[in-house]
Image (cartoon, rainbow, N blue to C red; front, side, top):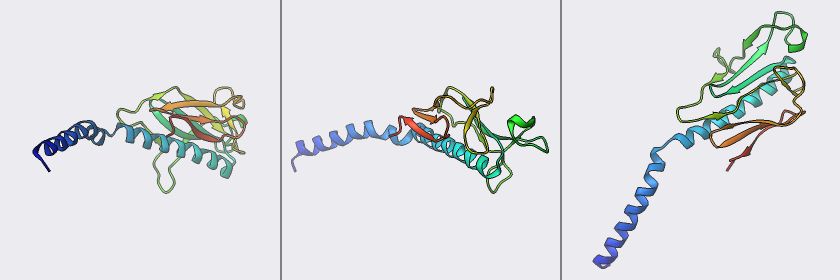
Length: 160
């Protein structure tokens, strides 16, 4: 190997290092991906809990984060049956509330407040009516969408 070839290889490695190294030290993309998956799992859990308990479970997602709550007034646990108190849903195996704020650098665009009824259908938390069309919120670069009627939750944009 000649000196010119060696300098060329070192120069190419240096250019690659300048481009690639910042990606390894910036965790924002990884944090956004992880928080998106956490939120998606929380919504899935809320629907499964509503099905298992036959109680309405409210999901709130906004720029401050997400939280899961259950209606309960001692005798009724459904939004339309006079249940007025909202109690935090606890994480499985813990007494901590099922709520989380986004990590630094991760933005949430839009806001959702809905609840799953006892058969897993999503309702608007304000009016109590079934969600008429798919609704979504953007977390980082990914869009989380909740389908009307079924409550199927999935990533619909930026999912790669």
